[in-house]
Amino acid sequence: MKIADMLKRSRPVFSFEFFPPKTDRDMIQLFETLREAKKLEPGYISVTYAPGGETREKTVEIVRRAKNEIGLESMAHLTCVGQSRQEIKGFLDELKRSEIENVIALRGDPSRGQTKFIPHPEGFRYASELTAFIRASYDFCIAVAGYPEGHIESPNKEMDWDYLRQKVMAGANFVITQLFFDNRDFFAFEKSMRGRGVTVPIVPGIMPITNYGQIVRFTGICGARIPSRVAMDLEAIHQNQEAVQDYGISHATRQCRELLSHGVPGIHFYTLNKSRSTQKIIRNLEHNS
Image (cartoon, rainbow, N blue to C red; front, top):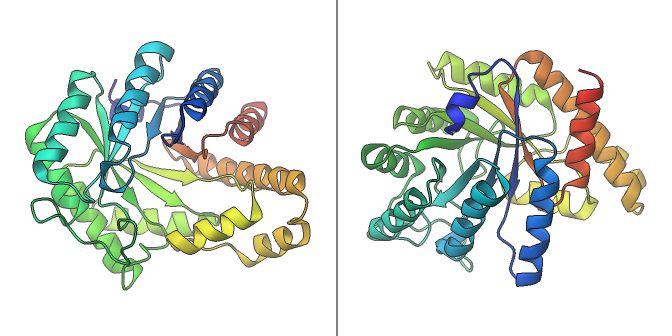
């Protein structure tokens, strides 16, 4: 089923992001996690794609098996990094043969050892070009990424949001945002995109805080901001892993409640291949619905 059709429903759609594991043992664990996630009745899952297509086969395997063996509607990530148009076409053809209907088109982060994105000489420079290519040649439902605080490489938010509009105009069906911890950033972003004439669904992306050091690294890489109040709270408990996880669950639950009351069409959870925090957040939301 195409995710854009799910997002038309009156009930919010919850979804989860996973990444291809490196070892066979971790792959087995991932599918155990996916079966646990199925109990939460998510609308769909997404599976990431490493720079240069390093996880291409695993990404296809996971989305295919998740859909056909577990019954989870699935979306594959696809980036421009290190790949020619022909290689990208081959990946899309694999998805089509596997009866996957959803893909998220991304420029992608620079390859290992590079400090900035360098396009493949026979590939795409921008996610908008990749989106246009997919739309012209295939019938996939296409998602693109949005950045409530602006992309880390963009000179300012306004320029980045103009670029997001280009991605939507190129054929995207909906937007999933980068993680954020202050809903005011999302609301300002959404309002600005609507003012630019963007009418497709905008789905907020939420990452439950589970590890203090990890979230500091992540936000440093992607440019997301940790609100001062949250940073102070975490600093006080950062040596207590269980307390950090509980705090992360409470903060994400408050975020989600406010977002849902605002009327968002769904929430996309960045799970880091773990289900405990996401499960508790969704149970909290169900308990208070």
